[in-house]
Length: 259
Length: 259
Image 1 (cartoon, each protein chain N blue to C red):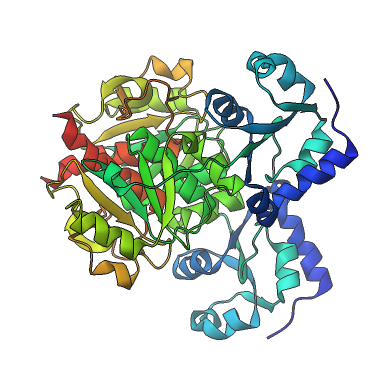
Image 2: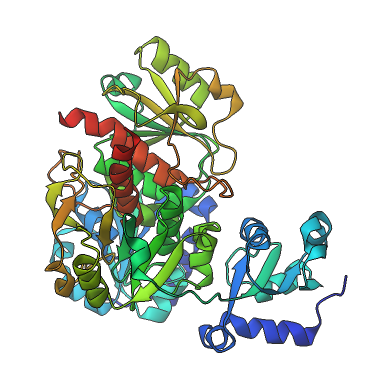
């Protein structure tokens, strides 16, 4: 297997910058689990840089028209966007997805209003995958899907869940008027999610980690939902991580479909 | 306000090492939210290092017998254990807690078998606080509570939830024999958590991020629980982050107490 050259390292290190990734329409996937799923997905992989170990253990790779380069752990560390570098890094083309709102009909869809933390967005995409939610709509000011930390936290779910960045105000009005989808939002004060009857299709909005859901969107929401706290200590400061809140709310919507 | 000296920085930087923290029985709390909760808690704070801004805005500090030092962002960066340093870092004494198993009677308690990721442990403690779970028992090989990243992810909940590190095998046998608590475990294959009737007291075990619950503990478990996936795509690789799984399971146990 060809070893990676200094020159190629220099070229690939440049992809750590969002600007360069955007220009070339490339994303970086790191780690054995994600690259393994990437190899199964229908995506154009450009290059894979990996340890000798990884290359020898991955039989699927020989059937792919991919630049495959061997690197040592020092070299992988230079290429990695993570604090703990992985055995394998892949560079692949960002797929072009066309948004068609009618696809959301009769489905449950998540809408994220300015999620900022990469780990939260990634975890929410993973949760969506688990609950069979096919579409996640992000506001334009949300953290970028192809941020390497987001991809890492999805554990590969970004290859299945379709994520779009849209003007939420326009999107929500269209979903409400055209598709007649009920619109729910997660708030600190609202109807108890455990005792509210929830439909099998609709839109669930989760807001920013510190600010919650924007004022401009609030008026479009049909029902405000709350996860009540079970802690009776009044000194406690209420807070639940947004990805944890997403999991509980999705769980409540979906558990009704079991019966 | 006295500015921090080079010498004091050197002394405090040493606390970034677990060995030194253990020797001196000190933990580090970073960030405005956590330090704010620390100031309300009944703990012995040794030193607070903060920006001029923070010191001027924090009125509670003048009533505390605490070493207070002003630092600039460069100095805070040297002291910080985080990639994004905060405006304030506090050094406090690790409180001594005595474990009394009888306190778990009639309560729901979480048991963590070798949780390795600091973010997961912190998030689980935060979830426990939300659901009114007072005790979290960790196996001795779990990530350390006073790891700064764990504390950060708890968002202050570590000041309320009591966390103990115990030999799980011994602890679980005692809980089962002495307190007659039913023992539940989260598994990939088990009874559907959404349709199983769940008691208001008992023990819920969550396992390691990749290995799950240890074989040695499995035999003590009365009921294996599973969160079923709602994704019907067979190509999907099942996985739910352990802190997300904890949230859904706690939610299921607690929602029954509403009625």
